[in-house]
Amino acid sequence: MSILVVGSVAYDTVETPFGRAERVLGGSASFFSVAASFFSPVNLVGVVGRDFGDEQLAAFRDRPIDLEGLERMEGETFHWQGKYSLDLNSRDTICTDLNVFEFFQPKIPTRYRGSEVVFLGNIDPVLQRRVLEQVERPRIVACDTMNFWIHGKPDELRKTLEKVQILLVNDQEARELSGEWNLVKAAAAIRAMGPRTVVVKKGEHGVLMFDDAGCFAAPALPLETVFDPTGAGDTFAGGFLGYLASTGQEGDAALRRAVIVGSTLASFCVEAFSLDRLVTLSRPEIDERYRAFERLTRFESL
Amino acid sequence: MSILVVGSVAYDTVETPFGRAERVLGGSASFFSVAASFFSPVNLVGVVGRDFGDEQLAAFRDRPIDLEGLERMEGETFHWQGKYSLDLNSRDTICTDLNVFEFFQPKIPTRYRGSEVVFLGNIDPVLQRRVLEQVERPRIVACDTMNFWIHGKPDELRKTLEKVQILLVNDQEARELSGEWNLVKAAAAIRAMGPRTVVVKKGEHGVLMFDDAGCFAAPALPLETVFDPTGAGDTFAGGFLGYLASTGQEGDAALRRAVIVGSTLASFCVEAFSLDRLVTLSRPEIDERYRAFERLTRFESL
Image 1: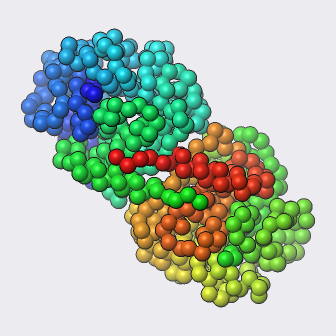
Image 2: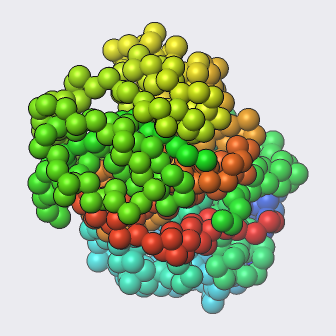
C-alpha cells in the first residue's frame, strides 16, 4: 500500500557534543519518507523554497518516493537550528525560521488521492483535516502533533483526532494532551478521543503502544554512541507505517512488529547527522538489527 | 540454595499523593527477604532497636526467613522519612535517623555461613567485605550500593566490587560509579571492576542487564496506579536473587528470567504502602503477572 506523508522538509543546523552540521537536510517528512521507503512507496507533500536545490533531493532519489507533491515556493526553506546538551537528553532551539512553511497549504496531487495510508505530520490540525478531505478512503490515518498545537488549538486538534486511527506522540505530549501524568491513564484518555492505537515514544527508554489488545513495551536499542538524535521520532514513524503499509495487516501482531521496525530505523538514524546513515542503509542491515531487538528482549517462560 | 542478605530493617514514614504511612516496616533487607522468600530460604542479618516488637516481625513470620541474624540492640530502630512528589518520580528525604544502624557490625551466625547466595545490601563497603570474610564459599555474591559510598569510599567500594559477581544499581548510580553518562559504556566500565553481571534499574523505565551474553532490556509493567514506590528496588533484588537461587543456574537465560521475576515482584510492591501487598501475595499471582510481562513484550520475527 502507498503512504501519503504531509510534513516539513527543512534545513537543519545541529550542534551536538560530537560536532556541528550546517544547513543539512531535515524536517519530519524527510526522515519519515526515507525510513518508510524501505518498505512501501511514499507520496510526499511538503514545501521548500528557492534555496532548495537538486543536491538536497539526492536523499530521496532512487527510492520509491514521489516528489510531485513537494511544492517549491518563492522564499526560503524552513530552517531549524538546535543545540544538544552534553548528555543529548535535552536540546535548545536556537532558531526556527518557518519561512515558506509558514504559508504551507497542503495540496494533494490527483495521483496521491488513492493512498491507502496517510501520515499527518506535525502541522496545524486544521491543515491536517484539510489533507484528509483531499484523500479518498485511506485504510489507516496516523498522526503526529506537538505541544504547540495541544495548547494553541486544542479544539481543532480534538476534531482531527476523531478521524485518526493511530496517534504517535512522545510521553510529554501524551501527558499534556490527556491531562494525565500516568501514561496508562493518558493513553486511555487519548484512545477515548478517537485513535484506537496510541504509540508513546519515550526516546532512549523506548516505546509503549496501547491498542485494542492491551499494551506493548519495546525498548530502544542501547547504543554506545548516539551521535545526533534529530529526526529519530519521525524516522520511527516512517519505519512503523512503512512496514505496516507493506503488510496490509492492521492487527496487534503487525502493530508490534511495526513498533520494532520503527525502533530499528530510529536506532540507525541517531548514528549520524541528518539522514546520512539512513541513505546508506540496506535491507539486510535492517533485518539484522531487528534480530538484535529480538535478542535484546527475549526471555523464557517460568 | 539459601540466600544470606545483609541490610537495613527500618521504620519508614512515607507521604505520597495518596496518603501517609507512619512508622511502617521498611528497610532494604525487609523488602528483599519477603520477596526472595517466595522462591528460596533467606537468612537475614540486620539490626533493630528495642522499639521493634513482635508486631513488626509479622511480615517475616510463616516464611522461610531465618531471623537468628536479626540483632536487637539498645536504642531505637533506623527510621527513614520521605515525601514523594505528585508524579511519584522524585522524593525528598525528610529525615534519616540511623539510630542503632549507625553502629551495625554484621555478625553472621554459624548456621548462615554455608549460604550459597549472598546479597550485600547498601551498607559501608568495608562492612560488605567483612560479611564475605564470614561466609564459606558462596556461589553467587550480589551487591547493591549508593552514591553515598560511591563518593565517600570509592577505593573501599572498588575492593568490594572485585569480589562481587552481580551488581544491582540504579541508572544514576551506574553513571556516578563509572564516570560514564552512556549506560552501555557505564556497564562496560563497571564490569571491568569485577562484576560479570550489571543490573541497571531504571524505575518506571524498567531494567537493563549486561552480562557475558550481551544486553537484556526489560520494561517495568505499565501500571495505572503506583501507590508507593518505596522498596521497589530492594523487592526487585529479592525476586531476582530468590529466583536465581531457586534455579541453581547462573547462565544468561536464568538471569533474564530472574530480571522478569524481580520486575514482577516490584510491580506488586508499589501497589501499597510498606510490605502490605507483598505479604498478601500468592505464588499463582506471581506466575500470572510473569505471564503479563510475556504478553507485554512479545513480538514476532519479521
